[in-house]
Length: 234
Image 1 (tube, rainbow, N blue to C red):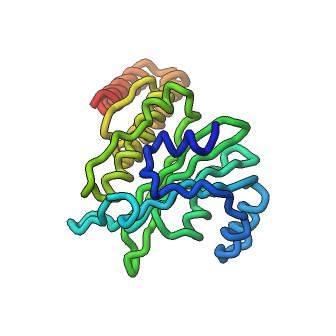
Image 2: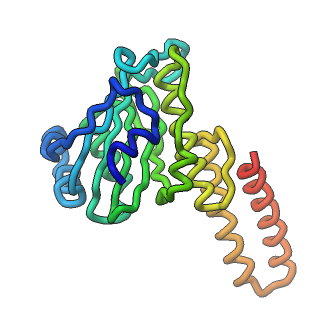
């Protein structure tokens, strides 16, 4: 997939588009830990800076209504060398670039996308609450990720939350074959927690030999499944 295709997925305003290669050293030179520097050096192949979305080039505004203040959003494409390193790479790049990020990861032409939930920390620095890396994006999922055009005056926070919601929806569709709309990261985290509890209870039911205890576990399992299905159906 071409980087220009990824830009189209997010329907980024043309004045925000950069789409150029960035030397890796520009990231790890700004990292304080040798572990983070080593991660970028060994697990990242190439980095493209796709877009820098700011109020002065996008028509979006900075929120003043108590939400986490987003002053700009940076969008990258990162070709990685190893699997299961995307979240760690996301966090290291975010350490070097202290703005909300959208990162497309490419491992052997398998595309995923990472977003995060941010909070306002000390001196209003952006703190990561949770990183979500999507499932591998098929063509159908990529089509469903297309972000709707927003009216001028939309805040950068609202734009990022819409992308975040699309990423979560795409991932849930792949993992559970269900795609609740307008889901937020807190809801996604709850789904993962319930899914883990369901799997744990299922294993306990299989191992339990006493009938009365097995029945009790099955009741708990049914309740967890019901709660999970309700979240996935909202």
